[in-house]
Structures are given as C-alpha cells and as structure tokens.
Length: 153
Image 1 (tube, rainbow, N blue to C red):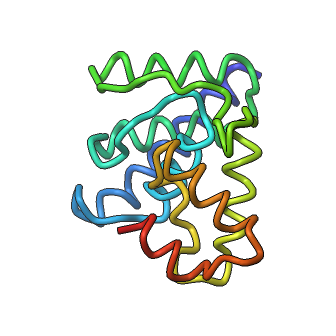
Image 2: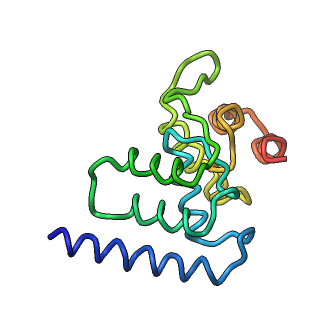
C-alpha cells in the first residue's frame, strides 16, 4: 500500500512538474493558481510567486493526494525546506468589528466574485482586503464593481 501511495505521489508530482515546466516561473499556470487558492485558505501566508516550480509541484501533490495525514505539517516542511518566507495566518478575520472564521470569509468572497472580472482572484487578497471585499459583497447598497475595483488595485 505504501508503494502504491509513493508511486502515485511521484507520478502526480512529476506530471505537475511537467505542466509547470511548460510555463516560465512568472507565468501563471492552472497548478500555480490552484496552489495559490489552497494556500489562501491555509494557515500559511505565502507569496506564491516566490515559490519555485518544484515547490509548487510538491505542494500540489500534498494537498491533492488521498493521504489525509498531517497535510498542514507536510506543507510546512516544503516551505521550511525551501527557506520560503511566510507568516502564519490567524484563523479569524475581523469584519466590521466581529471575528469570523477565515475559511468562511474566503469561501464567501470566492463565491461572490464568481461571474465578475475578479473571479478566481480571492487568493491574491491579504486579510484586510479580504475583509473589505467581504463587506462590499454583503452590502446590498454598495456599487460592488467599483468598490471591488478599489480593493484589487
């Protein structure tokens, strides 16, 4: 069973690496975006653009694997092994003076941006911008497209 899991992880990371190799380090790829989305919901505050293709492939294979054990710990190991600068994110974001779970805010903003020109870009926001975007999307009286433009610029 261990051999099967190791072989699967190796194949997955190799195929992820091959996809990443087709693009330059600064070019966005579906896998790089996927890792960015994953990290945005994790406890790690990482600049995805600072990660190498090998780190992106390793992170992708970790969180997409069938193995649930210690995903957060394994992600931390990849970041630490690569000497990647990161901060640990708080689990909660203060929105309008109320602490709310970060993952719920992120999910709500991601869903709220669907169908806009900012779709799929929630992972680029820091916690303050995420809280602002959430408040804009929850406010029925807001001119959300103009207000969101200010958040993303």
